[in-house]
Length: 404
Image (cartoon, rainbow, N blue to C red; front, side, top):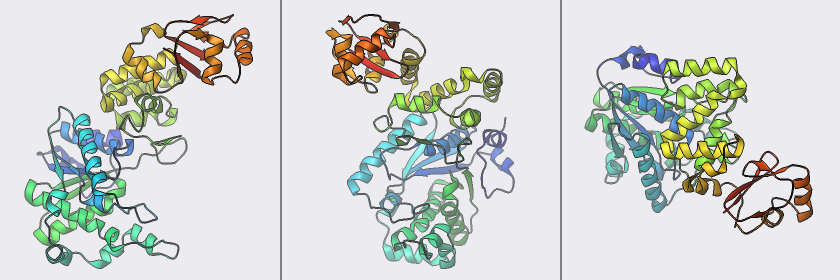
């Protein structure tokens, strides 16, 4: 399958300046894709575009992964109704390091170069920038941007000169990489289309060169019609300190049936044959949720590594699939301990349930035991008992207590 065919099959084609996508199937192209350090982690929204980047690399194109040390000092106003709060330099430095670490993990084993736009902006004189760059940008082009119009409109909250200039700064990134790294293509999400075109226009006006843009669509939850990538807690982050590995795994395990195949095409490296097989299984027996189980494992493996994916899978099987608690390793138990209440060994089930707050009283605990609603390590108990070794107590279907 050629790159143009794969991008179309996986659902990565949105807007592009290419007249014919088969241009991507020819000689290697130097391209760039960037993330601003507005947070200490990428989200699965960023990761969708990152997966598109993986396919470009796999088909022989040369990747430059940009971390926006300069643009992050301003903040992209596109899609924002209010002025952003500026990040401190320390925050930006820490966020840059975190994003670079995620680049290195997600693209491990792939050829790529990391660049930081702060490196070429830090010594750029303001007057020189106005003369060498700003002189070539029509004001009508900048004012015509949708986000500017919405902020300046009757119900808008206004826009600062700094945020107004953001697209000009990003446009210069493309020009700089075109001149110094031979970059002729920018990859981005659909929301960056306008900013990306600013770079194409600068390259054409200043260097009479030709460059292109290719954007991936915004991923939409087909079941709800809203942007995909939010959990009940908010954004789904790649950093396990912000979204735990277990919660990350569970997010994918619980995606809607309607969109599961599409998510597998976008967020995994599974082949067409593998995904077609999963689609057939889903049609035959949707209750098995094979596609969700595979999706959860594959995405967790890509982001957090195979060991973490195996651990999340095992913990999930113990909690909801009837696997034995004794099968869990110490690392698995640590993962589990971050998700459910934890108490120490050496007390009765009734005391542990009541003291942990899983039930409101010891009387309630006893009633639940008599009603067959309490199990220890997968076995329902009929009477109270002492727990002197690491165990998993379960109340009903979805309430758990780790004893260790």
